[in-house]
Amino acid sequence: MDAPRTLDLNLAPMHTTALLVLLAFFVVFGVLSVGDKNLTTDESRHYRYGVNLLEGNTDRFDDSKMPFSAWNALPAKLASWLPDGALKDLLGQLVVARLMTILFSAALALLVFHWARSLYGLVPAFFSLLLYIFDPNIIAHSQLVTTDLYATGTILLVFYCLWRFARQRTLTNGLLCALTLGLSQVAKYTSVVLLPLCLFALFLYDLPQLVDAYKQNAAGTIKMWLRNYAVYTLVAVLVSILVINVCFLFNRTFTRFGAYKFRSDLFQMLQSDVPLLRKLPVPTPYPFLEGLDWVIQRSNAHFPVYFLGKVQREGFPGYYLVAFLLKEPIATQLLILGAVIVWLRDPKRRRRVLQDELFLLVPVAFFVVYFNLFYHVQIGIRYYLVIFPFLYIFAGSLFTGWQQFSVFQKRASALLVAYLAISVFSYYPYYLPYFNELVWDRTQGYKYLADSNIDWGQSSSEISSYLAQHPDAMRAPTQPQAGHFIVSVNGLVGLISKRDDRKWLRTNFEPDGTLAYSYLIYKISPQEIEKLCATTEYCQRADD
Image (cartoon, rainbow, N blue to C red; front, side, top):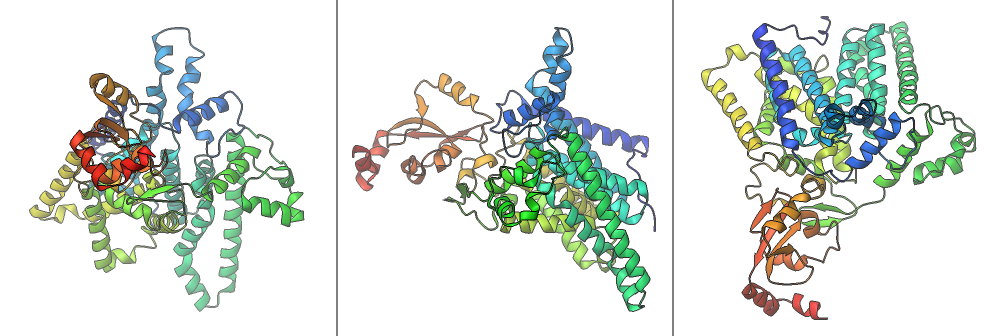
């Protein structure tokens, strides 16, 4: 079996130049798109946790903040050691903290290119790369001081290293896999499922050999396999625990399980019902398990979720599938669909699944099922980003054998990429509220999704500018009134206010425009209010 290529740029000069130009474009475009956007709801807390860690403090003040955020705070920390001047001022700016996420995302783009090239070849790799750098959701979250992109990147890196290890079982590949698994644990708690998921993927990869050994009654082979898997698990656990401890600065490691102050029902039940467990010293830092407990408690708290015009606390099955359908560019969806159809129709490619695509499809299958059926914190497609790079790499398989493509096929591919670019550029520089052309009228996105899909506070300063430029405008009132109004999507649908506060506006009038695609503008005449009062009870309720 051929050994996988190492991560390098062993390309012809022309191809190397094209790759570097695309990566540089992604970084520059990301910086230009950031502009002077406001901090989103979570960014300040992520940044604060990163600063605290660099100052030696990893205690929790929030549930999901992780050591990876120190990467965003690093420039400001370096600036604190410099003399006063332009460089110190620059390193302390928000745009530089956000640039650190963009650089990480560019490295992730390089990994997408490399893995696709290793599996399918050069041309497919460039198509996979284009799908990544022209994804508006990736662009949007690459610009933020949050951990969504870090989780996306580290999960992809774990499975890439696992793929390498599966094909070539060397100590180096095994340790790299364990190391990346540990790093994923300090990016986001989404990664806590990776160890069993990796073992499952590796088991599927080895399954044909195990079946053969069973048929031949080769008990020794099966015992060796079991012993090897026990070693894999032990090494992965030990290395991951070491990485977690280093990143959390060994903060109260080996605190007894019974000494924790848990919030979630799960951990409280374990603490009260399993006496032996209470005496067990936990080998991970206190804030690591504490944060996981908080996240579990929050995920079971049933926050209000808005979906297709409805708000409920139980969440909606299929939420992330619909969000993907509406917020992922149509061209990208067509290319992914095309890759799936070709894969299903081509017996040769299907036979390669255990050798190649297994390590792409297992995480996609798991997270699609988990997020759409079992995860109730449905507040934005950003949680779903973890499957995107796997899909882009797989989509690259559609272009295997590019040299044999007909002129029509090549032109159709080029047109799809052009359509993708036009769709994405049309939203510049506002990518968080991107919807594809299924939502043609950009004032209508709020009828499908809200929360961090559209409005995460990133453009709040533009309301003040708008009000200053339009003296007759005001923030939308909670009671029927004629006038020129502006309202955030989340305020209109009732996520940041009472559900009925602006029902009169939401159910009886259509927006006349948008501001940054996150705020809606209404111009309501006195005649329209008279008609509303004559035909509904909203005005009577206001009088009461």
